[in-house]
Image (cartoon, rainbow, N blue to C red; front, top):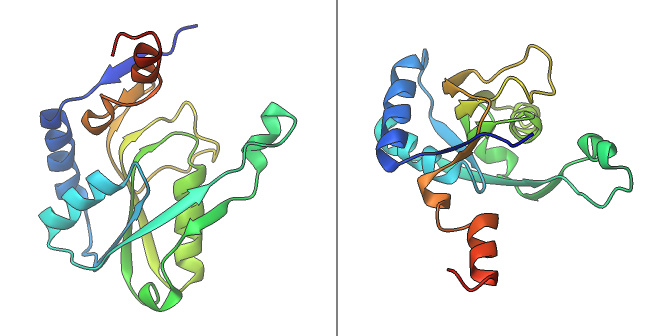
Length: 170
């Protein structure tokens, strides 16, 4: 079965951000952007909401496990994460581009909470069909999808572009 793909424009992303802004039912004084996908939407939201306390978190889930299915249960590795004193007592919007399985954003949310922050999750796209967390969902999302989303900042990268370059077509 071929995975449905959807290529977005910058105008599409602007509309998604415009759809998110009115949803916020409280004020946030910090944003934690999850690298790499959350950097651009997080920056756009920070600018639109006037949030200057902007932090990043980088998380990796190892893929070296022998059984393909077991990688879903791998412990996350935090490559980068804000210090607890930057999170404690703050209302924090945790931003990523998409909630697929939900592992990455849930991991970041839980660590922010453990540091004393009050996190809410926000994504441009929520894919309930891949969600590993039952009825859990992002606190805020602009759209629901079952497609593989290609954002405008990804158009000239990724496996298709690499393949074209390898074949001498790029």
